[in-house]
Image (cartoon, rainbow, N blue to C red; front, top):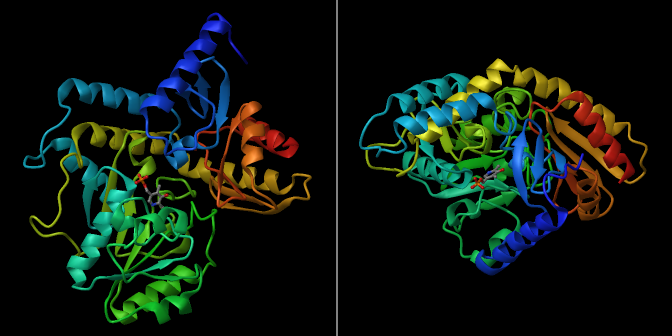
Length: 395
Ligand SMILES: *Cc1c(COP(=O)(O)O)cnc(C)c1O
């Protein structure tokens, strides 16, 4: 698969120069893989040496429609010729159109646009606070909601959280995931909202028991507490439906979206149910809902429809999970997932697996130390899945 596009020595020099510049000029906050990526198409990415990889990371559940989907690329190019940015002091046709489309795919009433997952969680928290007049949150153990100080206040992992304490919301109660009684006990007079991922991503692809979210919904209704679903990772077909909430038949009051929303272009949004909305001046974002992002998001939604990606996510996910469960390995604790959001829990830390797979042309990510997280583009083919399973079986 290696194409000798230029002299190997030149390529090595180019690679070294990128690594050198990064180590000199970029804050060293990422633990990066030794790979310089330069191209992508569908479920495959290419490094600067021309070596190809089946991408089961997909920008961490971002490239749902595949890398450089032609519908998305075309829309971004066309929009870039017309208008790159204008303030939210003015209307644009494309933002209004995307809002209508998002309301239709989420089943909510209104949306607010921002630029990332953390910002979407911030917006959801602010809306819950301003609409309830209360300030505390209930969140789950092993939750991940983002890195801004507000989103960190409801994020559980101590490595992410502890160095930045005190939190903005000092009153977050963390309770075991998939335990509705624990939520009932944790809700106080001052709880604005319960915030949950309908499947925990960063926490190791944890799927709650089927009744959990329904019970939480009932508890929230009884106590007058808002329910926020963080669908940043689970959205846009990842689990086989537009949003994961559909898998459990439960509607939140507010939901956050980002990652896959723009088909690779940065964007975030929240959607809220009937009657729940920011008032004038209560929240804003300079770039939120900008023309380029809206064009990318509309195109990405069109691509999901055109390519039947909800169905493919469901079918290929079931195929993938079936094959992973049939692997002849003693060290796999569990294979779990919905659609193409899959976790393979193994008996020891999985970073060596990541290296082994990369060397054989497969990109995977390790989360929660011992869970291989597989979130490939939804356009991944059965042949590509077969190759991934082969490599993981040998690993
Ligand atoms: C990735 C993620 C976030 C944070 O998104 P950013 O765009 O990195 O700020 C929030 N919530 C969940 C569930 C995520 O997976």
